[in-house]
Image (cartoon, rainbow, N blue to C red):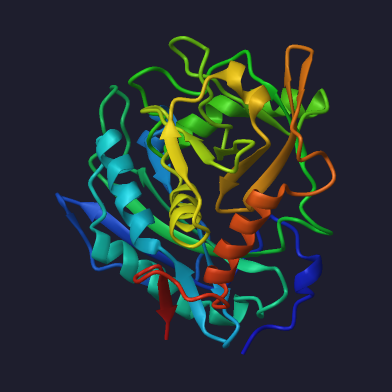
Length: 340
């Protein structure tokens, strides 16, 4: 049964659910893990995560499909990405099978908080890990906690996906050969001041350039870019310092295999953005947010798709991927994990 909530008026924020998963790492091994009801975390004031930001996370969603099943979209990809993040932060790896079991358990326990099909809402899932024991010298922790909580979130776009305006950022999101390719909490802390400043100045997001030459498009604070050329080719930036978005990789597959489009994953230079027909930001929350205007230090780059609605290619990609997620379109093998 689904709880009686006004799903259509739910925002994109935290709503406490009844159950969460927790597992502890101590003396070189993970414990079995369990579902608990306590949503509070207790740790030393000198915990490594509080002193040196040793933490990483993932984000995904559970949905109800057109036939009423509860599903999670490509959780194995999140498990693999979290392994990369753990390795990059010198944290113990959470094995893929343990990660997937945790997701399964916590979604099943909170099944009554998975919104009904057609509401536009979903159950957001947040797995995360952090160094827990006291560390005052700069070194990795010895003890860790892996947790997964869920929160119902409303539709990202209320009243349709209106194109957004972004600016070219003066600051860098990540360092060359740094942590830009992993989902570390510290990467997001780096972007907070800049996103607040962007909002104050009337922009929805920041476009970060490559930190070495500042001539190539990388990503925003929390999403990958996707561009469409005037002849209908899909182009995504390629870089070692951007987060490999699962949504972006899924859209690339959908563009090729479902929509028959040509796709290029390559370096994208800022000075060629003015020649694209469409642009979008892709990520878990919105799937694709259309971009209507990019402002480069006063110079406006207005995409031909305009500021009123998604461009035709991005709209087709959005509708196809969401159709796959919601069970309206047959999914590639292994993409949809059903929670029994």
